[in-house]
Length: 131
Image 1 (cartoon, rainbow, N blue to C red):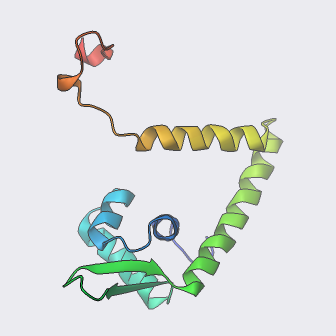
Image 2: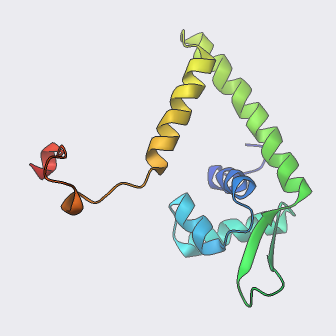
Image 3: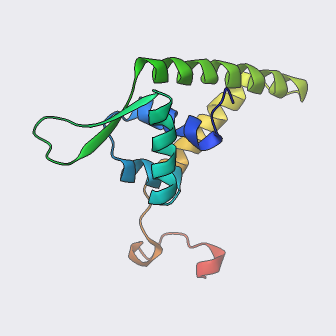
């Protein structure tokens, strides 16, 4: 979209929400290897959409941040994607606001840290694969 790969767009969204994270954290958030994450960072740096710099007093820890061009690109793509999703939802009879709420709820659930099955209380429900 707009000259970005899907992972590059998601990286911009993540950096907009979590400025100052490291490349390692970004890679983990994207679900890619550090090598793949490094390639994404290099492409975004080359396009002037992010910065990668150490802040004073942080030693060698390099932090990624959006540039103003990166903020603009992310916002523009979000608007384009939002219109497209809304139009497609309406075309199949879904309310875009309800869909957005469901997606937010699903996103929040996916990001919730769960207790591993081994440390759950004995009265907690188990999934079938653990039964």
